Image 1 (cartoon, rainbow, N blue to C red):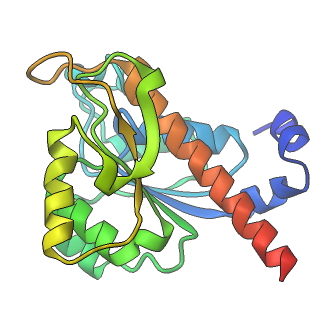
Image 2: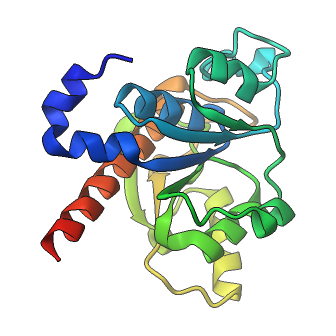
Length: 218
């Protein structure tokens, strides 16, 4: 796809971005926007993993969700040609056995606790993880902070507690919203879930550029 404006912005780093090898785990309200952002920014080696199909309840926040009943990864591959797809459920055992060592970055947009904890313990050095993005309305409250400094998020609280039990003490950052939840149930707003995904993409691009600069300085 045409990327002249990305090339103009990123300069000599643009070729590095093109060659980066990134895997996105979960392509729902957060991961789908991370995919869109990376693809439009010129990243050419993207793998997405998800087992789910689009449901009518996804249509308020997920790219591709007009295709109700279709496999998410298969339909997104039509929208974003040349990406690689893995149609698998992201479980604890899958993370334990699937080798992700060849990827430069792993983008974690899943919302299952045990697999998420496993991901952090195993791949924290090249992992970008999302905390809870639902039930919130203000994208300006999004931060990228140490997981042990997060609050107002029952989901990430459980992750924190499990990491402490595993004696994990690294300064691992997550994408997080400081806003108090605004509703009960499954309410969500694309202005926040999408912003989480765009933030994830931006952090990924910055990490790739920083790594390249460190390599050049050696």
